[in-house]
Picture 1 (tube, one colour):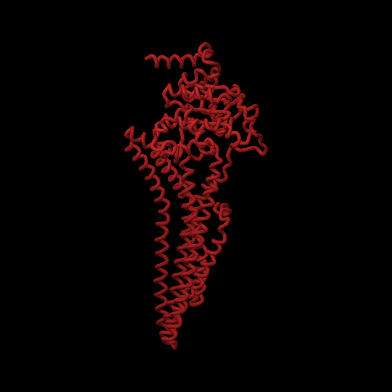
Picture 2 (tube, helix red, strand yellow; picture 1 turned 45 degrees about the horizontal axis):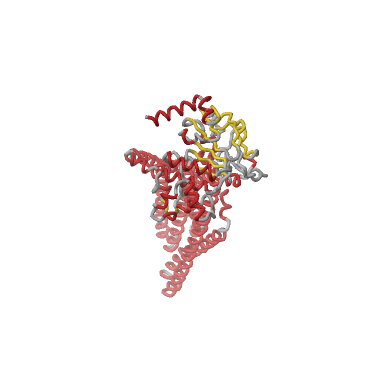
Length: 577
């Protein structure tokens, strides 16, 4: 899977190759040092070379060490550039893919999981690439060359390398086999932890209002403990494996010095040769450890790469056809025998069943029904936030699936049930509806949405910065800004999903009046809990358990629809009481 992500290294291959070349320079010069050190001892100290030989080759060692250091520093810098660039490209690609997802795709992954994949998972892959660029050449090269020099110095003692290799291979293979699924589970635990933190921070005011801090702390503690426990299992393999390998390696070092000491006493080996051999053998051992650690890190990166691959390989279920048409821009909406469920893979009843109606351009259509009756699901099908499972949703007599998605949504204004504002000024938030809106257009939209007066009371008026999610505004104020943002588009179709629930009835009446006066040619869908919000609509649709119970004006439904009449009577009784 990591190999499949290699295309995101485009533009950074030069840095990657440069880091490998720099590492080869470091390895080449560093591996000469033990050889020269041994010669200095044998020839310069104990031989005929004398002080001049020691100084000459000592200076050479310093020069070679400086060159090796320069190669190492260059490798570190270039590997950082390559790995950071790779992560940058991969993160962009992942974000771009997520931005194409439908609501259904996002529901399947969850926001917390997507956040983890964009951050923690990509960072793990980035660190692995950086480590591989630094060690993938260095460790095997030093391992092979050091082994070669060891054999050249003393073939008999070098056979010990063949003894330790099977042990190392078995240990690493076991770690990789059992570690990979553990790393996968660990990333899922990170997903869960992010979800808990995300929910808590977004709903911090509710948490404090209901004095649920202790409950949330326990929930976080449980998620954190689960992550820690899984992390212990994953790292436990490494913790167990490393001491075993080090015990084997240290035993070999002791054995080599014992054997070497005997050979020096027998006159079959010099001190310099033993020094060279021991240094090269230590290089072999240390690089075996490095290769093992690198393979373990690759196992975790593979788990992360698979999770990123799942995102990149997911195709949005809502996408343009090869040939699309542009909307006529009239605003007629028609549902023909529409059925809908959130996942076609699961069994169960449809959320919407056999929905059929027509809304003509300029109509104001009210949608009312009990909680869970499918009101929000119905209007979500118009801008293709979801697609109908069967049947057709038509705009201007053309199936919405035949339109270009961007052009379709540009002609539709939406105020969703959950009011979403972004960090930035009030003016910047309103311009989400129309990028090039003038100050006059912004003010007009806010006046129509009954937001102008409270905006002027803000510290900087329209230039007042909103905190994250508009937390420094009341629910009604946020709703009015969202309505203004939708109205400034002057859309052909406007969808208001329970968007005046936090607004008093007098203000709501003024907003409805603005719809009639300013959006005469716009088809408006109003989802409401209060019948007073839709009483004057041209057409009211009553939903009951995903089915249309009745369609008509207020007076018609009062006569013919028992559910509508019951809702009206209940609400009137509440008003009178």
